[in-house]
Image (cartoon, rainbow, N blue to C red; front, side, top):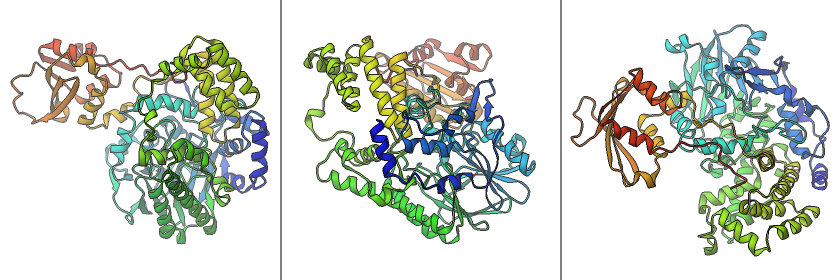
Length: 625
């Protein structure tokens, strides 16, 4: 990939140093040492692991991706504007601190409580021990709320002294996104962010939007002040905030806001220094690029006349009104261009894979560093737009009922003359530099015979070469993770319970029951007809649960009312104890023994039910069957 990387270096304005100037502007000091321990002694964060980025770009990295990683690795405490400070490089996201009359408003407290606490300590070392008098979440992704309990005094919170601001429907989306498909999403996120990869010139060099996710304690403090409409104004500790709701953009619930007294615009994660994702490689609902474009246009109209600095939940700020308008205008046009041109090609009959290859940004956008595909990409964003409008099926009936990967792989290998013939020809393609084709065709050999070490090594070599040429950091991580697992086997560290304790605790009970229903083994459950009542006295809730036809359904019962006549058993447990059971922090027998869970009626019914739930294995394979 060295030739392609050399061409890219000639095409892009590497001599433009303004981003580096902006990324270093206002720096006060870094965190020393540059690592944070989790409460259990693990290293939750280590920015020092990326010190290798101080050198020139090696042949094992795309120069644009290397440049982005160098910028993201500039960390520490920064002064952004009057009374506005950011801690960057302390997690994959930024934590912003705004000084008020008596304390500080903390905006987006990172992923982990330990990292957020360290960020706040760094601020206080230089600005004094000001109390936290407000907390604000710009949107529903965990890297913008997970560290909340690391910065808020529990006594102040319990006493209701701290307003916690968030966009309308925040809690619903923040919790549900991490629960229903949370396990699969967490496993794919390992590939996307490269968590098991060692940082290094041939390894993980960041994630485009930041370096990587921290691994400390994920928490959630529910908001107590919702922003419900654009134009809403709130004052927190003397700080005036004027809001713009932007639902359906980078997150299902998101908001920008202006600090009019300071001439500062927080653009949340709606305009960062790269092309963002319309569909993340970890998986999520497809985002709406048309709405995204419209909201950025609205941001220009609402705020830019009063903005002298713009900051976000990732990357570095941008100063000067003219430059802010220029960036927002090009980000607006970026998402609109992708949307409109994908639809144009779609309506010409092109399918997603073709559109991903055909679509290129116009030179005015492609030459802008903040429009480059370091996190999202033109290729997979075009496919996402196609999926949003037409779904994954491309309309070709030959693709309507394909064989699954393993039986298809056996047929492909047989048709191509056997594994030995495939590998011989694939080695030739590797020498010619056709690494995409090598990875695709040799993957069939691996799926037909996962014990074929020669095939696994050849595919791993091809994926490595694709990684070394990838401008997009998440593509690089996917390729390198695939190579690693082909050589070593599955290396997942995902917990069987992907959602943290705070997330489960704030999931409404009906939603939690829906999440449990997703674990029901339908074929085995179809042999049973069960009716139960589950009672949660501490929250005054009772539910009738039915297992029949292979599904679990539930409906609320009136508290204090009589149970239906035909139920076989009643489970009585406080919701807090039940959360521990669901979250894997307690076992059924120990809750019964402690008197925290009681069963009335036929206890065998409950044992049968719990026996019908899958024990999920988070370490499922991805590059092998």
